[in-house]
Image (cartoon, rainbow, N blue to C red; front, side):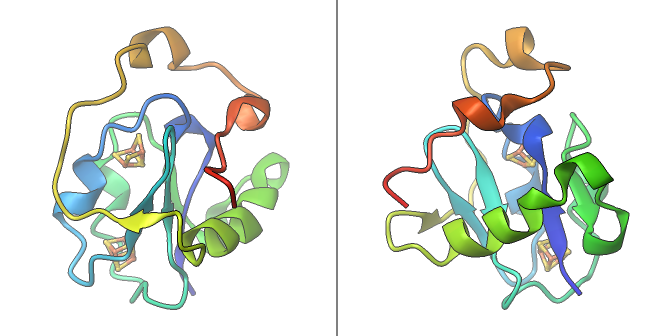
Length: 112
Ligand code: SF4
Ligand code: F3S
């Protein structure tokens, strides 16, 4: 079992989540974060930290976002995606993107 970052994070990237993870298993791309499922210990600490409700347990991922389970695994294991452990400022246009759906088309995979 693992937790998954969903599309609500795309173009927002608040990064509150990384500060609570006991095993530092968040990885960062240009406009999205992912969780490495091989490292996540299923502690659930990150889920309530996200201000846009972008993190869910694998079992609670909505049907429309099931693709993000594989996306988290693929991107977190790509060398271009670097581990992130400290909070930084959210992306500048996060307010504009909050609540927008179907953001997969603007996901920057950073070469992965
Ligand atoms: Fe980290 Fe726990 Fe969230 Fe997994 S569930 S990503 S271990 S904070
Ligand atoms: Fe993304 Fe929420 Fe973390 S917007 S970076 S999952 S706090």
